[in-house]
Length: 249
Image (tube, helix red, strand yellow):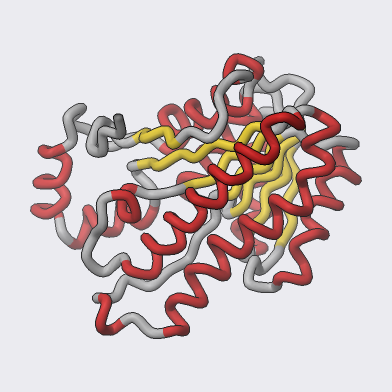
């Protein structure tokens, strides 16, 4: 129970990688507030994970900046504290660079960068009080570059830069900030596998570990470590949980 006694917010937690993180957190003993814009799916996820611990759900569209501080308020109201903020939600459109519109950039930055930035600001006083941490999500698509991922990759790299700045500024306050870049069997990847099985198989063959990560047991487990006291001297780091595809030295 590495996270026993801790309270966390996980954005985008109704499905995919973020759901895996929420599941891993609950099973590690944390109380979790799942945030997602899809109310029915979010409620179902909260009910499912509630079998393992204390889970609440809050329906919020992260594009609504005025609603973001209320997420932190709700977590503190429910749990009496906040120890971990996980910014995992991200929406984007897959478009070639010359087809990418300002609206596509607004979507990627609105759900990703701006939501991460504003939630970090709202959560910081509470994280100082608990000596807590932030886990943000980047992507190999931003680090390495990937066709059709102009808006997504740009937002993810902006999040990484923001995270490193926060790690420097908040370290003396006892707040750690780290980044996970995952490769996992999310619903989006499963759709890709179904429609483009040859491309999927070719990609897996190039992964040094020759498999795709699991949202809970691989990505979620890494997030549990970063949120736990075992990572108490780890901050400002980008952790590639991608089977060895991107090797940062």
